[in-house]
Length: 228
Image (cartoon, rainbow, N blue to C red; front, side, top):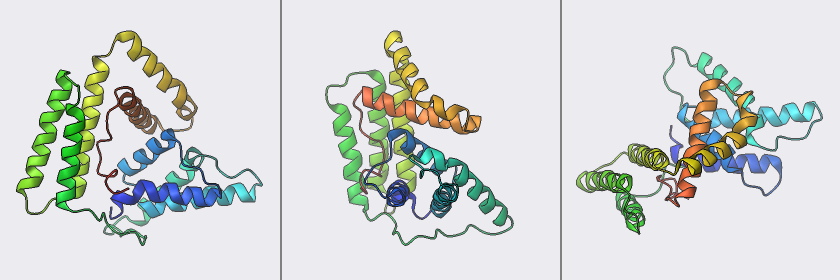
C-alpha cells in the first residue's frame, strides 16, 4: 500500500472535509481505521465508501455521518466490489496524490532511540526491560543495513508495543484490569451488533491496547508519529 504512512491522516482529513466541521475523529474511530488498514483496504476504497455514506444520507435526507463507524458498511461494500474486480489482476496502485513517507534512515533510527529513552524513564517492570531489548535490536538492524523497509520497521514497532501492552495488562491489579476492560467493553458496545465478529474483535483489541498505553503513559510505537 503506497500510502501506508498517510493512511490515517488522509482518511481523517477527508472525513472532516465531508462533514464540513473542524472536528477530529474519535480514538475509537481511529481504531476502526487501523482495522481497515490491517485488512488491506486501499485508501481510495475507504474514501469511496465515505463518499457513498454521505451520498446515501443526502438522498435519504438524513444527517451526514457523524463518525466513521456509520461509513463502515459502505467501506466494506466498496472493498468487496474492489476484490471482485481485482480477481485475476495484479495489485492496483493507490489512486492518491500523496507521497510516500518523507523521513530517512537517520530519522527512523533517532525515533526508535527516542522510544528507548522514554521507556527507560522510571520503569523497572520486566516486560518493559524485554521491550527495550526488542527495540534495541530494531535500532541495531536499522543502523547496520544500507536500506530499510519503513513499513517493516513500523510493523515491528507496533508488534512490540502491542506485546508490551498485553504483558502490562496481565500484570495489572485484577480489580484495575477488570475496570479497564469493562470501560472498553462499554465504549465499543455500540459496534458489536453492526460489525462482523472478527472485525469487532480486532476493534476491541486495538482499543484495549490504546487504553492500556494511556493508563501506563506509554508512547506510540509507530513511525506514523514521525510522519505527522
